[in-house]
Length: 300
Image (cartoon, rainbow, N blue to C red; front, top):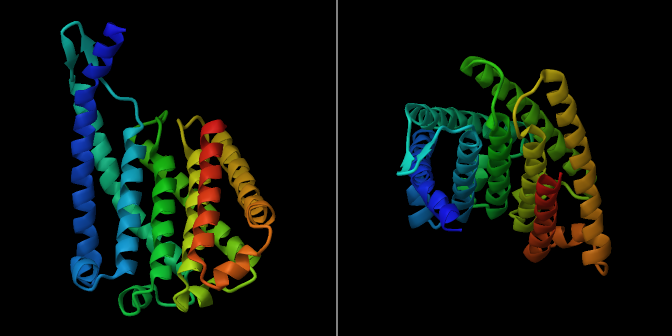
């Protein structure tokens, strides 16, 4: 027991290195967002108390950390001796690789968010809704977009590869693109499966619809993470597994939405409550879907 405890304590320095690196990555991600944003984020959050901006920024920062965790999930190099823990030169390269992958992930995360906005929330101007109208529903949807994007990028860069660093990066980009396609398809299918127009409701400041939509995106993001997670073995196996998980996830999440209607809220229709702006129902549906996606991730 004592030896196990000592061994565990010896790994704390490694963890602290990554904690410090994560804080640095977050700070750089915030600076990057400030640089590409026309409005003052700090002023909107603090002076204007703009909840929509705060929600989008929170989702973005969470997405960045998810990308960082995907980069951390790589083989690391440690030297454990009788005298304690030592870091060899390879561990330093691992930390540098995590940092560089995180920086690249921040760029990809911003690009993915822009693409999803153009392809999914295409019926209204997202910036105007968030800045001028302070539309919390749009902010909640953007929260989901950022977190889902972070999850798919984390899955694409997690694990090891059988090639060089350049080949690994290209594989990560390819699977990120596959994850983006799956995310957009799910969002479009979600819109088709609802009895109301998501864009119209969100544009009318319906926070409940924005929360439900964002929650669904996070849930499918977890499914995509599972589909992409792990070491790259080969293109054929990787693509087949991805398609199977994606299709299964689409069907599962749709079935769970029906289950919420039939079992958890049998005396009312979830869609009616969402149109009525019932934030509580939106949170219930989101939590059920996200929880189920988490179970799927750890159980399979």
